[in-house]
Length: 144
Image (tube, rainbow, N blue to C red; front, side, top):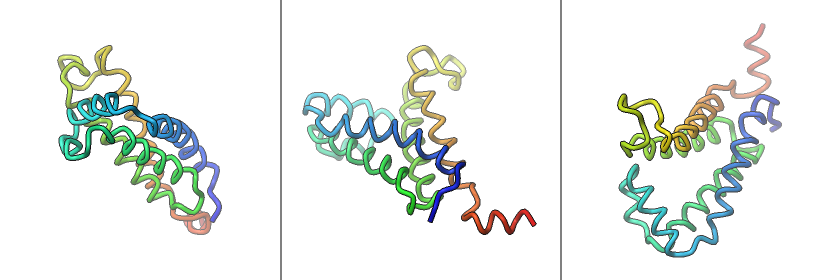
């Protein structure tokens, strides 16, 4: 299966960022791992069930797998988009889960929240990937 240019554009850039982030976390020291886990728990409390000293490595492996899946042509756009949407939604729980990240209206980012608010583009790209036509042949048939 070959990917259309639109698919490549939606997949390659987030894949590069996520893959780089994941690979960087694979060597996370235990103290830093525990800090990451505490922060992640502000949005997703279930992460507290993971071993604190290994959380960074687990997160790194998950990010690396998602980045690789986005770069792999035989992974469908819908599956890659679902993974990207879920990952981005998880980051959005961190954004909305911490009051200091938003202005008083609870939506617009504060200066502290801008970094996480920018991750909303991952959700948009994931939804876009899931919405793309299933294949080139179907897309051509629909144009007739």
